[in-house]
Structure formats: C-alpha cells, structure tokens
Image 1 (cartoon, rainbow, N blue to C red):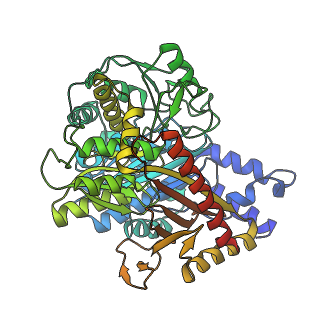
Image 2 (image 1 turned 180 degrees about the vertical axis):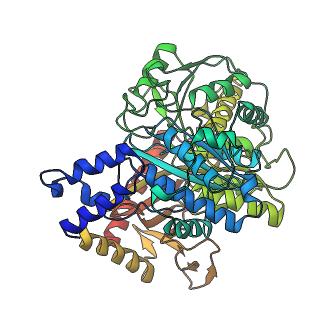
Length: 593
C-alpha cells in the first residue's frame, strides 16, 4: 500500500482503539519525519492471525501486533462463537489465566470484561498462574472454554492468547476456523461492549477464583505418583526461568515428599523482561547457566527447569565429563525415561505394560519425536500412536481413543520439552512431569544407580536412539518457491535409498497415504499436513516438512543403532553419529539436487 493509504489506516485504527497508550504509540509513528523508516507498514501489513494456537505476536499497537484492541475483538468473536455453538455456554462460562509477561494482566482483565459484556460468565485467576493450571481449571469448573494469556517461551517482546475448549484441550479445527470467522465480524475495538471489572464483578458476570483450584490440582499431581518409596532426600535445583512456575512447583515437590529444593534466586520471581537470559527457553544455549552454577555449589542431584509459563520441562543430571558439571537431557530422552517408568509401573514390572486404573495402556508422541517410545511400547504390549506436532493433537486423540476403544491414556510427549502424565491436564504440564521425574530419580537412587545408567540400560535393551534436525533456509519469494518445489519433488519422486540405507515406506501426511517400496498403499487417518516421513529398514527415520512460520524446510533425522552385549556406549554413540551425518548429508543433497 502507498504511504497515504498506510497513514489513513493507521489513523482509523487509532481512532477506534480504546487504549490511550496504543493511540499515542500510533500517533508517534504517524507523526514521524519519515513514517516509512518506522515499522508502521508492518503493523498494518495484515491482522494477527487466530489459529489452533490462538494468537501470538509482538506487543505493540496495530492489527498485526498483540494489544488490547486485538484481544477485545478476538474475545468478542470467541464469545459469540461460543454462544452460537455451545448450549449453556453463557452460564458455564470461560476461565481465564495469565502469566507474568508485559500486559498479561491487562489483557486477561479485558478478556473477562468483554466476555461479561457479551453475556458470558468469566472466572478469573487473581494472580499469575502456570498454563497447566489454566488447562486443568477448564474441566475442573465445567467451563465451556478457557483462555490463557501467555507467549510461553517466546522472547520478552511477545505475548499471546491461547484458547481451550470445554474438554480442556487446546482448540482444533473446525473450532479455530469458526472463531476466526466470528472475529472477522467483530466491530471496531472501541465498539466492543466491555463493562469495567468492578461493574462486571458486582453483577456476578466475573468471579475471582481462590486457591481451591490450585490445591485440588496439587492433590491430583500427588496421585499421579507411581511409587511412594525412593530416596527423596535428593538435592534439587529448580528454575522457573523468570516465569510463574516457582510457587506451584515448590508446593508440588513438597507434597510429593521432596523437601530439598532450591530455586535459582535470580530467576525465581516472575519478570517479563527476562533479565538474565537472552531467550527464556531452557533449550537455548546459556539459559541454564545460573541453574548449573547453583547446582555445582549445592552438589545437586537433579536440575529442573520450567519455561516461563511452566508447560515445558528441562532436566539436567550430574556428569563428570561435562564442562558445566551437568548434562542436559534432550526432550526425547526425558520422554523415553518417563514413558518407560509409567508403562512399567515404576520399574516394578519390566516385561509387560501396566495401567494402574484399568484399561489397556496408551502412549502418544508427535510425529517428529523420537520413535523410541513406540519401540518400548510395542515390546511391553502397550498401544502407541503418533499425531501431528502440537499437544492439542495428543490430548484430543487420547480422548477419542478412550471413547472408541476404552484405552487408558498413560503418557504423551513431544521432543520440544513437552510432556503430560495421564488425564490430569490435557496439555503440556511441566510441573507434574517434573515431580514424576524426581520420583524416578529417587527410586533409582535408592537402588544404587543413576538416571544416566538407567538410560544406558534402556539403550542396551531397545537400541540407542539419536535425533537431529537440519534446517534449509531460503530467502525471499524465490526461496519460498524453491522450498515448495523441494517438498513437491520429494512427494512425487521419493528416494528409496539414502546413503546406502533402504527406505521401506513413505508416509505422506498431506496425501494421507502410506506407500511401501513394493507399491502397496494404505490410508493415514491423521489430519492433512505438509509432512513426509521416510521409514528405513534399520528402524531409523527421516521427516521433511516446511516451517509454518519461517522460510525454512525442516529435516528431522532419527537413528536407531543396536548395541552388542558388552559394547561401550561411546563406541555405539560414535557409530550412530556417523550414520546420522551420512543420512543428513545424503538426504539434503537429494532434496536440493
């Protein structure tokens, strides 16, 4: 758009924005000596898109940013879609939580008041809460929906709006599409009905919650424990990464009998500026440095980290060969350890999977997570499923299979540090997973062994699983077209050997078909997605998919390397690394040829 049109749109938006700070922000950009030298054009290049993850974006004024005006219109759309599709939805209401990021409280209160203005009751947490507690609260209160104001582990300049439906899981199609269409029909933000918080509370349309929900959640977390023994005196260092997990996590550890927990003081309190980390994600280099320093001083047996909204979990363990004194496990390793612990009833039964509360056991992983959980589940006689990336798919699939087949969901995970234990929370839950991992550590400690030694034992039984990722980045429109052509070529003419390794089948999630090397096909039941998975005869796997947010093609490599009896782990690891490199180099060459 030309400058005149841009300025017209900006002034019109400012006129309809009820937030005086946002209006001043737009006015300053419009009044700049040269508005084209500012980010004004990007702010009005489009509208922040509502999808299965709700909203997420940089905080700022304008339709392509995260702000009060966008949240008012979004909540108006959510409310009206709920009223149209959910009998009794107005009375069931919507529960709302928020984290410690900039503007989170204001956006949560705006959400509650907008719902009240639309005739929908709102339950509002009075202070910051972790995302798992909000997800738990939706079915706990019998609400029709839930909203969590959070940007999870994104950089400090971001915030977001995560939507849950009445089943306690994040929304999936067609609900997301229906809400998005309702948002498109919403009036300008200034015209959205929104009583004050005091008025809405006086009329009984907004109710502030007390500690009952957290207390009930913690009691249920304690019930998730498989064993009550173990050496629970182990020293634990914990960091919430400047987020909102500290209070609830420490209460959960104490309830489970772990008294020796020390929080990283510099990162203990919620702080949306995240002053001690460049990126508030435990996976990022340097993010765990303060935790490792405290762990060395305390001679800690276990290091636990949550991301800022406490839905993800990172684990590190003492290691004499690591420069920091601790080795951080991958999400795949934590998933394998927790999944095996739960399937075997806390290591008490190693020949057959058990499900303490009845029903045949079920575990689920995302398609880009390590296949190790599936291999273990097959040997232990448990059901295993793979779903598209995102916990919304794990939670909804678990509920579907329970309804259809009576299977009991035991555990789900995705490689990006996300785990859920049982049916307590139908989303990632870094708090309950942390307590369960501490329990596993304590049981092994009492048995005179360590988590790393136990993990090696799993590798010896099921094979060493190694995972890596290669990102192929291209710039501009030509680059995006090139990435699209790569996926098209791989789909139409898939390779049947890579670096001398035979490919036995190709899974096309867009075409919803599995094709074997002999030409036989069968249908895939998962929703359509632009993903290809190549299954190797060795048990290894390659996955290709374009990024949904960046001009990248992402290639995932999972290698399964068998271990001979008495063979050193270092030897097998080196062999797996070599296989991984040869597969990655050869596949990237084939894809870009």
